[in-house]
Length: 287
Image 1 (cartoon, rainbow, N blue to C red):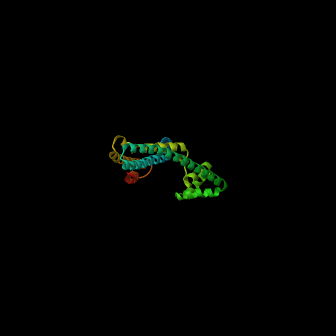
Image 2 (image 1 turned 90 degrees about the vertical axis):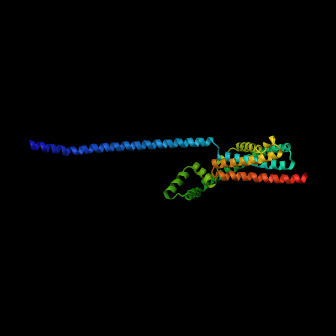
Image 3 (image 1 turned 45 degrees about the vertical axis):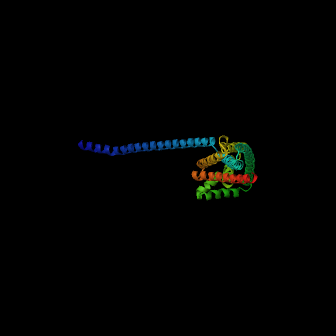
């Protein structure tokens, strides 16, 4: 009986070890499954968060200033300020009369703004017509010579550094969607973007308004000061504001804010000096 008992105990231990091993493995599998599920859940949450962040970023960008808005504002503001600054300094150095300086400055302000708005409207409209003509040309080429257009897509992304299967996958993805294919050709090959030309009226309004704002700045000092003091303040104020606008432009876009600010300030100073010299010469000639 004693021997049988021992043998039976050993037998039970011999068969109980695999069961324990199976239970341990089952626990490990369950833990791995839970860990895998947790990883998938976290990955899904991360992707959802990134997608929502991207959508929010795009929405904020669409509400903000576009590239064409920034371009139009800087064009109108700089042109209005620099042209009017040169004119009022030239007139002031020639006539020494605040009233005449104010009249000439205000006339220039509004004439300049209307002229700039008209130029912005016609140029944007012409650029839009050119964009759509190129769009139709690309549509025709994709339809008639697709093999050459596919090669152009391949060349574009080859130059960007893509090779092998990755390059082939990109080309296949783009050329499988006609709209994506066309948009890619317009943006990557021709560097033409529809948002830059869509609204000529809006472009004209932004340029005209910014030209008025810029042109008023060098005129303001002559409302309150004599001619000489007005000239000094108009020049100083204009240079400071041009520097600030140039710096802001670099911050909003890409570039060194100091370099951009100095560049715009130098342009304003040169225009002012030219106006002053011409006014001084005319003042000597006609007085």
